[in-house]
Length: 315
Image 1 (cartoon, helix red, strand yellow):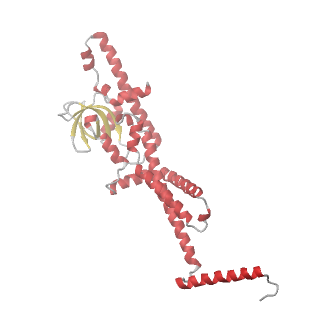
Image 2 (cartoon, helix red, strand yellow; image 1 turned 90 degrees about the vertical axis):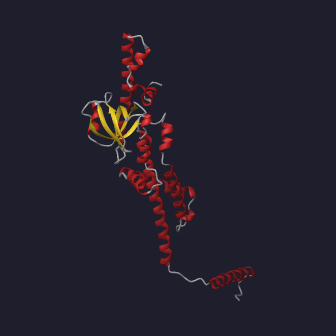
Image 3 (cartoon, one colour; image 1 turned 45 degrees about the horizontal axis):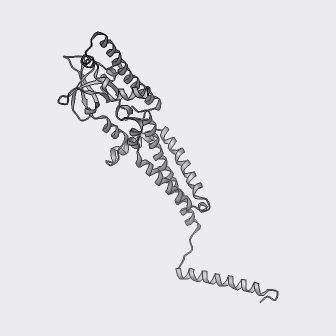
């Protein structure tokens, strides 16, 4: 024993030796084997890889949500819903919000298990993962991956409701004045009647007196379109057309094009309202029968979409 060592130093050294003995004894009992530093290096990289996958899936979720939000913001929701809020509540892909939230939590958990991640606060880790997911999702959206993923899942996963499937559900409803399909031919007996086949395979006679030249041009191409109007009889396959709008879920669509189509829809619905008002005033000057006035009004004036657009522009 060293002569200059105090009693306190002796006790401290004895305590350290005791702790070492207990640690080595515990290691011997547990049969712990030494591992190479590369094992821990690979384990750390695995954790980072899982974090990257979490951010990747979070970015895909952001891309789909962004695709849906931008597309639906400029959609012609007045044709299917009373207002934008009821429409967006039905159209939003809630499953992707859940996916994004789950991936964000997983990414934070993975970062906490990295070499120095445990030192950072949860808010910092969550914020960094959130920002990376948003940036990646924005890049995916620009590249059209939001539409691609939504469309692909709709084809391979029966339980997943893609935006195209939701649009078909909302628009294929002839009793409420909406059809999806394509023109087959123009009837030879009457040029104002168009043969139209909807997505369910039903054949319709479309009265085209209230369709514009642009509407007729869409129909003549034989492409799938959305047809807005009114069923003339519940017992027949006759439909009075009031507007034709392109089907916009078969490929990624630019925001400018969606916005342009919405403006065309609003202008068309407002024109139906103005035409009906002008027709009503002209008839009232010549006849006094309210029944004749109503009978002379186009069926398009009674569309809910016409009323909604007019109320929106003139609250």
